[in-house]
Every structure is written in C-alpha cells, then in structure tokens.
Image (cartoon, rainbow over all chains, first blue to last red; front, side, top):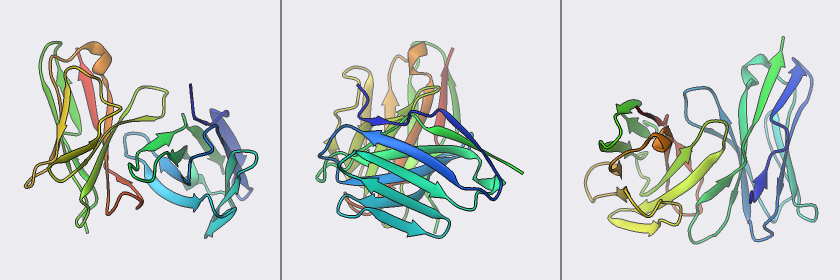
Length: 113
Length: 113
C-alpha cells in the first residue's frame, strides 16, 4: 500500500509555461513534505519543502502548496525551462523521531523548447 | 563543502558474492540514511544510523543485509550472498539532525549477474 502517490508518471510542458506536479498522501500523521529532482544516473537533489503547519512555500521559480484536508500537495514551476526536465519525487516524513522519508514513484517532467 | 559521497558508483557481483557499499556523509552531518530504488519505483527507506548506532532498520530485509556507521570512516551497507533481486540503485543520504533536510549521494548501482 502506497502512502505517497504520484499518479502521473509523466508530464510534458512547453518552455515558459507552468508545470504542476501533484502528490497525494494517505497518512494524516505526516508532518513534513519535500520535493526532490532527479536526473538519470544521479542522486536526488533537494528542491523545496513544506511543514504541515503551512499551506504554501515559495523559492524562486518553485512553489509548493499543501492542502491538508485533501491530503494533497503540488509543486508549481514557473516559468518552466528545458533544464527542469527530470524526474520529480514527492516525499513525506513519517515520524519526527525517526526521520525516514517515504517517497512517491516520481513524475517524469519534459519541458520542450 | 563536498556533498555526500558514495563508492563505488557501479558494482557488479555474481550470485552468492558479497557487496559492500560505502557512504561518506556531508561534513558536519552525523545522521545517515540508506534507500534502495528498484527500476520504475520510488526510493524505499532501508536503515537510519547515527555514529555507531542503528536508529531504525525497519526497512532492511531480515537476512543478508547489514549496515554500520563506525566512529571513524564511512557508513557501510553490506549485502551477503547477493541474489539477482538485489540489483538496484542504492542511495545514501545524510542530515545534520533528524528533522533536518536529507541530502543524497549519487548512488551505487549494483548489478547481480
């Protein structure tokens, strides 16, 4: 049973437009959420995070929105650039004392020039 | 400030051999996490260690797998008597504290023939 779900395996967006990546979770005890970006043959790179006490966090072109009642978060990238093409993973922290992350399966974003 | 380092980057083993994967955390980080990624899947938590202590090994297979993080030197993930199903990418992450952001290494790609 997947506690963190990314239901879109892939997403294609035109350069300059907005990319919206979605993530759903089932465990209401999750208190912290993160987005990582991954290029082939590399490790995940931290992008942005949000605490469960907030509903929005912004960092440059990246904004994460959290809707706790819907158990849903999304990552907005605007404007999208070809270099943003990668696999994006949503992750949730399950336990404040243990810290292990629970990952979704990822969404492959392709930004076309 | 060097990031998380993992070696080797690629490892080929025959069934029944042992695999040793090494991880050096970022400077100043004393928390280490190991994750495994199977093809087309997200990362799955295996084990969380602090210096000389295993904090959480709930994601580790009960047999053949072990991990350590000695007082001196890198963290080691050891897989004994490897089988084909162990073929995967193994990622190490480190953090300054249990509630701090985890930063990932480039991974070790293990192929079992």
